[in-house]
Image 1 (cartoon, rainbow, N blue to C red):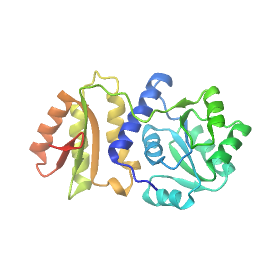
Image 2: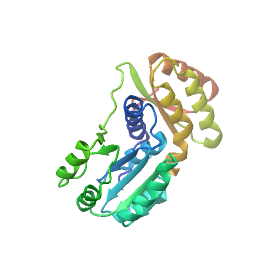
Image 3: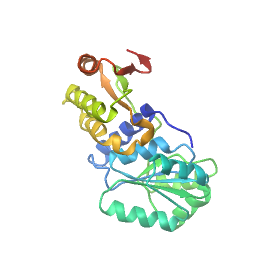
Image 4: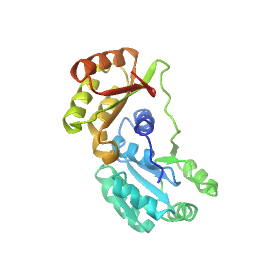
Length: 241
C-alpha cells in the first residue's frame, strides 16, 4: 500500500471540498467517491474528512487490509453487494465511510455500470476501464483532479511535535483556525480539516498537522506557534522555517 504524505491528503481534501462548494452547495455528506486503482489512500482519507463516502476498488487484498489496520479505511469486503450495502446505509444518513473492495478493478467497474451504480466523484481508473469510466462521467460523475487550484501566494504549512502530541496538536490547530481569513471562500473547509482530519488520518500522522494558508495567515500562525511552542518543527512547502 503506497503511504501518502499528509500534505497530499490535505491537497486532495481541498480539491474535494472545492468541488462540493461549487457543485453540491457545500454538502459532501451524501456523495460517493469511486477510486479504482492502487493509489487511493489520499483520496479516500480526504473524502472521509470532507464528509463523503468512498469506494476503493483494488485487486491487492493485503494492501487494503494494511489500509484498514492503519486506520485509513473503515471496511474491507470481497463483493460488490457487501460494499453497496454499507454505502447505502451510511449515505442515507450522510455519514462518511470508506469501503475497500478487494476485486479486479476492470471487472468491478463493468459490474457497477451494468447494475446502475453511480458515484458522484471519480478518480480516473486503472488502464483497461476507459469505457466504463466514460459511461460514469456521461451519467454525471465528476472527475477529481490530482491537485487543487490554489492561489499563487498560498503555502502549505506543516508542523510536527515530538512529545505530548495529544495536548499540543489541538492547541496548534486552534492557533491555525484563529489565523484564517474569514472572508476567504475556503475558510470553512480549512477549519473543518483542522477539526475533523485527526479522526481519519490514523496512527501514522498522530504527531503531524498541516494547512494551506496565504501569506498573512501563515505569518500570524508562525508567530503565535513559535511564541507558544518553540520546540515545534515547522515547514513551508517542504522547507524548514
